[in-house]
Image (cartoon, rainbow, N blue to C red; front, side):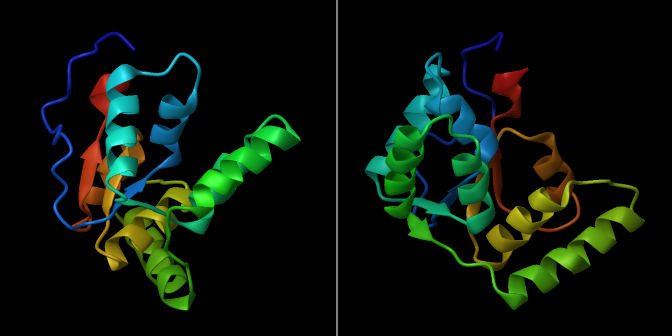
Length: 153
């Protein structure tokens, strides 16, 4: 975390009517004690606007990383208040096709990220992330992303 100036693609809080899917890679930076101020401000602004969506995979990643029962309960309660986007057969099928396409183009992406990206794509969500894998996926499909990777390097 060398820089605290916003990356070039920083959009402030003007997200229009689109919901924002915040990836685990951003939540981690926003929830830690020594948080990144721009990331925390971004997440808090989106939460205040009721613009944040969550998918089951991110829910699992976040809750699986909690350290105590109290932290688990507190975070679960907060995550349940977000817009819930389900992953059904359509999302899994899209993820399988995307994983195949990515592999054929020489890109090895974790399947968890493929599922998250596919779900964001199918539901027209803006994916806010700090994970280079999503930038690679966005080279293959018209995934709407906002990358915070420049803040993390």
